[in-house]
Image 1 (spheres, rainbow, N blue to C red):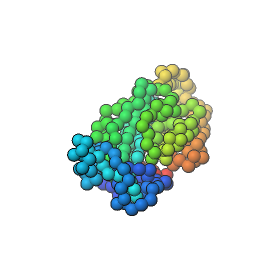
Image 2 (spheres, rainbow, N blue to C red):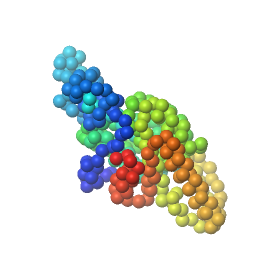
Image 3 (cartoon, helix red, strand yellow):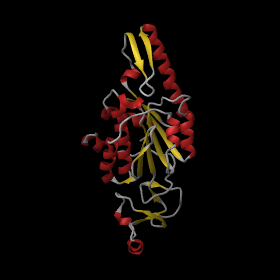
Image 4 (cartoon, one colour):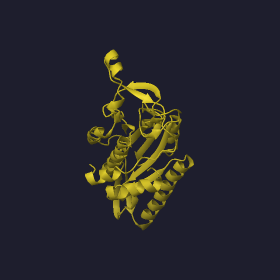
Length: 282
C-alpha cells in the first residue's frame, strides 16, 4: 500500500518515546534497568525477524527450541497498534490502514516488537508478534485481509484486547464514542501503555458539501434520519464538529497523549510525516 519512495523516507525516522523500554531483546531503546549492554538478563522465545546473532545455540541443543538472549541496557520496546475496524471507518479505511502500516513499519525498522489489533464487534483480529524489517510483508498481508464491519463501543472492543505488553500504543480511530475516548485511554494507560491517538476522518465529515432534502443512514446501526441540508443545518454541523474535535484534543491533552487528525481525503504520503512530526510522535 505504501510506495518504496515513502518507505525510504520512513527509514530515516524513529517513533518517539517519553519513557524507556521495559524489556525485550537488544533493540534500540534504552531500558529502565541498569548494566552494560553485554550484561545478560533473561531469555525469550525466538520470533521470525529477530537478530539471529542473539540466539542461544546451547539452549537449542538442550530444548530443541530457539531462544534469544536478553541483555539489560539496550532493549526493544513493545509497540501495539489498535486499528478501529467498525463499519463507521469504511469511508476512511484506506487511510487508516496506511497509518497502521506506516506506524508498524517504523516499529519494525526501529528494532521494536510489533502487534496489530483490528478492533471489531464480532471479535478483535490479532496479528502475530512481529519483529525486524522482513516482517513488513507479514504486516501488509495481515492488514490487507481486514475490512471494517459491525459496531459496538470502541471502549468495549479495547477492553477485549489481550496480551498487552508495556510499551507504545497507537489508537487509530474516528473516535466516535458515546462519552468520549477518555475511559479507553485510561484503561490503556493502566495497562502500561504509552498512548498516542490518530483520529481519522473523511473529507466529507470534515467539510461536508450537501444541499437539499437528504436521508442519512448510520453505517453501524442502520438507523436513518431525514434532513434538510440548508444553511442553518450546515452551520449547526460545523459547530458540532468543532466541539467534537476540541473534546478529543482536550481529552488527550489532559492525559499527555499525543493526538493528530488525519484527513482521509488528502494524499497520505504527503501529509503523514509532517502530521507525526507536529504531534511529537516521531
